[in-house]
Amino acid sequence: MYKAKIKVTLRKSILDPQGKAVEHSIQSLGYKNVKDTRIGKFIELEIDSNSEVEAKKIIDEVCNKLLANPIMEDYEFEITSLTGTGK
Amino acid sequence: MSKVKFGIIVFPGSNCDHDAYNVLKNVLKQDTKFLWHKDSTIGDRDVIIVPGGFSYGDYLRCGAIARFSNIMKDVVRFASDGGIVIGICNGFQIVCEAGLLPGALIRNANLKFVCRNVTLNIENKKTIFTSSFNGGVNKDKITIPIAHADGNYICSIEIYKNLFENNQILFRYEDNPNGSFESIAGIINKKGNVMGMMPHPERASEDLVGGHDGRHIFESVINSMN
Image (cartoon, rainbow over all chains, first blue to last red):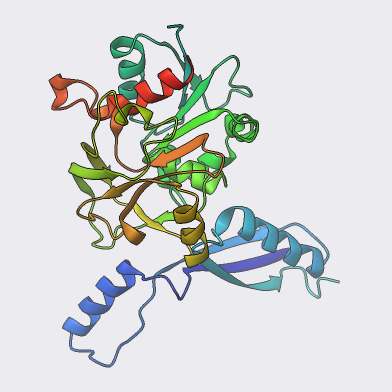
C-alpha cells in the first residue's frame, strides 16, 4: 500500500488570478517581500499495490487523465509506502 | 422541412437543459429529448446539446468529471463520426475536457462571476452554426448573455494559429469580459461539426426574454440538416 500526495498547479505560463488576488492581500498585511503566489490543489490518495513502479504509473495515468488538465496545469507528487519497505 | 432530432444531455447540476429544451421544442418545434448522463447511447438523435450549468458541482475542474460520464463516450464517438455537437457554457468546458475542442477554460481574469448581455462579433458565417447570419438575418454582431466564473479561454500560440488559419473562431467578444485569449467566445473543431461557446444562445431566443439573436444559431443548424 502506498500513499500519494499530489500537487496540481496552473502552469507557470498561465496567469493565476486567484494567486494574484491573494498576493495583493498578503502585501496589504505589510509583507511587501512576498512574491509569486500561486494557488493549486492538493490531493491525497492511497494505492493498493505492492510495487512502487506500478503505483507511480497509476498516479501518472490518473493525473494525466483526470486530476490535472495538461493544457493548463502541471502536477507533481510524493509517494510513501504504508507497509514497511513496500517490497 | 423535416424535424431535427435534438438530444439534450442532463448531468447532475445541469441548469440550462430546460432553457435549451424550451427553445428547441416550443419555439422552434423540433423533435427534442433529454438524455440522462447514465444512458449509454444517444440513440437516434441528430444533434447533441451539452448544456450549461454546474455539472457534478464543478468539482475538481469545470467539466472534468462530466467528461467521464457514461453518455459522453457515445457523444465522443458520435462527434468523431461527424455528428453535430453544441457545447454551451459548462457544455463548452465539458467538450474541451473531452478533447473534442482544443484549449481550456480557466477562472475569469477578474475573479468575478459575470452575468450580463455581451456583444459578439461573428467571425465566420460559413458554418452550420452561423449560416443564418449570412443572408437570412444578415448580422455581423449579436447580443446574448453570459453567466460564468470560468470562461477565460486559453490555448497555446500554435493552437491559436491553427484556429485562426482554419477559420475555427466563430465568435469574439466585442468587449472582453473574462480575459479570454484574443477575446475568443466560441470556436468549432477543424471538421466543423463540434461547436463550443461560453455565451448562452438558448437564453436569448425569444423576444419575451429580451432578444432572439441566439435563436439564429439553432436555426442555422436546423437549416443545415434539411
